[in-house]
Image: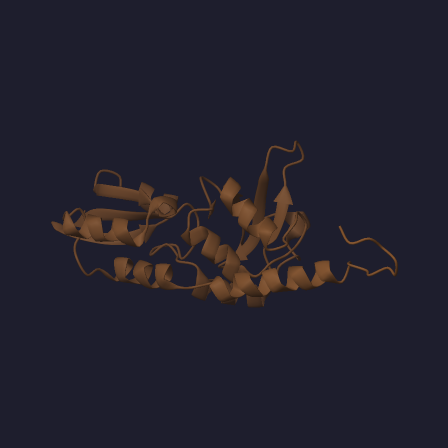
Length: 199
């Protein structure tokens, strides 16, 4: 399960998770941390992978230049089952199969325009042929529609269809379940003391 962590200098938060077989460091926006905090997630607390995928869809959690790494001290924090689950929850590079600083890339192959999700190494191999490169963190369903309508990307590609399905995922039930659990824990700390004044 992903875990929320704090920078030692107090400058913010980040998330470590196992995604597609790699330990990934996600940067978080202030709004992303607020969503987690409102649901009862504090630094050091694990939470559902589905919620991290939801934060990624909204741009509140993202990788940027080297978010993927292998951390010796943390290699046993994540299990294989999580990696399998992440394959269904996170998009991947069409070439490397990884989730790392993904961009939706429009490029030419033999004079034909293609659209693919690509990681940095795959993008580097296409130098000179890339016509469009948009980071996953700033994409949305409306941006996809605009890119197709303005013919910056070919219509009906598998990459765009997969992204539309990904954006359609709904984690609101998982957020609500986490909020209810937090409320139950908080209510468990309330005590009625006879003769105590109600404030």
